[in-house]
Amino acid sequence: MSEHGGRVLVAGATGYIGRRLVSELVAAGHAVRCLARTPAKLDAEPWRDHVEVVAADVLDRASLNAAFRDVDAAYYLVHSIGSETDWQTRDRLAAENFRDAAAEADVEQIIYLGGLGDDAGGALSSHLASRHEVGRVLGAGPVPLTELRAAVVIGSGSASFEMLRHLVEVLPVMTTPRWVETRVQPIAVRDVLAYLTGVLGNRDAYGRVFEIGGADVVTYRGLMDLYASVAGLRKRVILPVPVLSPRLSSLWVGLVTPIPADLARPLIDSLVNEVVVHDHAIDHVVSHQPIGCREAIELALQRVGELDVSTRWTDAELYGRSPADPIPTDPEWAGATVLVDRRVVRTSAAPEALYREICALGGARGWLVNGWLWTIRGWIDLLTGGVGMRRGRRHPTELRVGDVVDFWRVEALEPARLVRLRAEMRLPGDAWLEWSITSDPAGTVLVQRALFQPRGLWGRVYWYAVAPFHRFVFGPLARRIGQRAEVANRRMPVGIARE
Image (cartoon, rainbow, N blue to C red; front, side, top):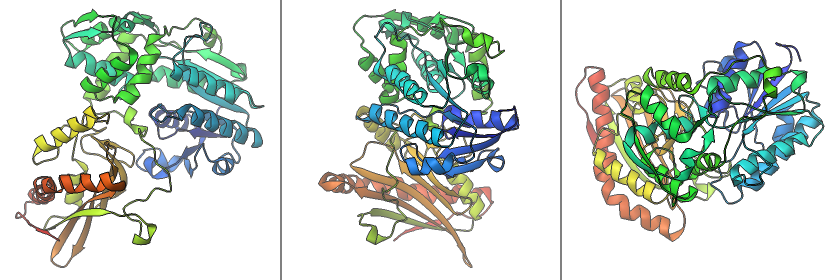
């Protein structure tokens, strides 16, 4: 495949690496087709008009067959985080589907980003072992596979970087498990992208597994010391203790960082094993000099400081749902019981001003009213194994479909008309928070709905137990949004009615 020839399929295009990779491929002049279960998640990307987006699922072979039509090379950037009991089976099935669809379409090359770790010792964590198994499954077909194996990825918004950043910034003194002395070879996200694009169409890379890493080999403790130095913090006091298992460590990380325990566990598991590049064959195939840890951390912090974080670890959904699950726009005959708290605000503010105020909710700005109630709800969620409130948001004022806003995820956006968030907290049911904006001769109407589809008896008990608190949260929130939008328009305050 020539440098600018052929169509390239990217599976996992909505993820942390996938979005950045698509940007690189487009800049290099490739014809790119993005595979996404929810194509709307890519609508806000600056390269959206330069790519083709198809709705497909790696677990649905029929949709894959259509996505592979006229494709010459395909990237596989899909991996479960292990929050479901059958995640290994799902990963295996997805890889088999992808491999077989690629073979049927006579694709020239599959490129897969896996995890660094030594198979010889037989002591890989379940997550690393699964990553390697996926590579073997993809490589078992007739299409040549190029597998790149990386360890800790350092980049603005990456899960590894956010875990490192919050551990060091929050805890000046920390007791740590023994794995902080394990050697790792972190790699900057820019170097991962350089290798991913460098092997595309490179026949010397066909049918091979490559280990990739940055310029430095350090311990995780050394990495924390390095972060503190780059960030201008005092050197942290680190006290390793032998009793902290990976499971306990992941629970602790879930409490003191925005990374939930379900996601922290595979990250920590990868650190229990030494993850260092031993085979440097990639140097003879891709001409690229990776940067060291200090420069990678400096670049990541610069991006964070400039609010120029193009992708975050939260771009990957933590709790998937079936396409058959109901959404709040389903008609009543869909069979779902949906309980609603509805607030109506009439205002003289322009629809665009209301939309901007809604899009800026959450994160560092908070939820405008009774923030302590939101904080308590976040801690309850965190202590029950949920994501809590500390995931924040990618950008302080901009939203795109699929973005995370604290313990919500953006499900629908229509500029100046609609914002709908879906809850990702632990709940006995499904919940949404939705704002719709309409205009009439008397002004602008904002309708805010908190919707809950209960699951069984406990779902209904939960809704009616928290309903008394809605008057302190949802009513003031709708009113405050209207007031702030009017201030932006230099207009009069508004009133609120409940229907």
